[in-house]
Image 1 (cartoon, rainbow, N blue to C red):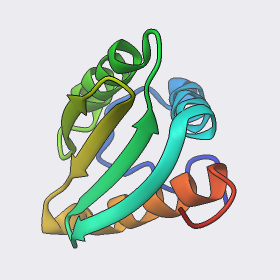
Image 2 (cartoon, one colour):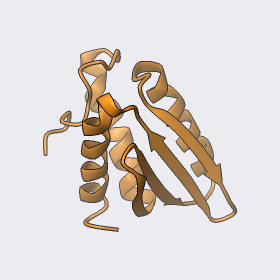
Image 3 (cartoon, one colour):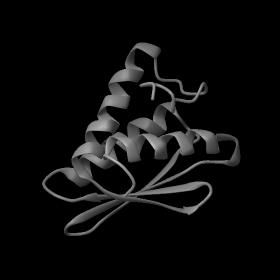
Length: 112
């Protein structure tokens, strides 16, 4: 899987910064992903283990991602031991969400 295969052409993040952002997502997923689910065709849920700074890290990354890829809508819910990140897109960008899900599963080492 290419480093940038899930990045949409409509992303406004400068090209040279895209691999760094992808690496941030990969690191978060590799370190914290417990499971993924697809509550709907336009929504991906990432359930992450909590811990010191995890909620802030997720919120920061989601906010920065929304700034360059306005088609993403992120909702963060945090509990004592977990952070749930819901990612939704419009129908035009469902292929981007599908690619993000595949990348998350691969980065986490397989189906969750």
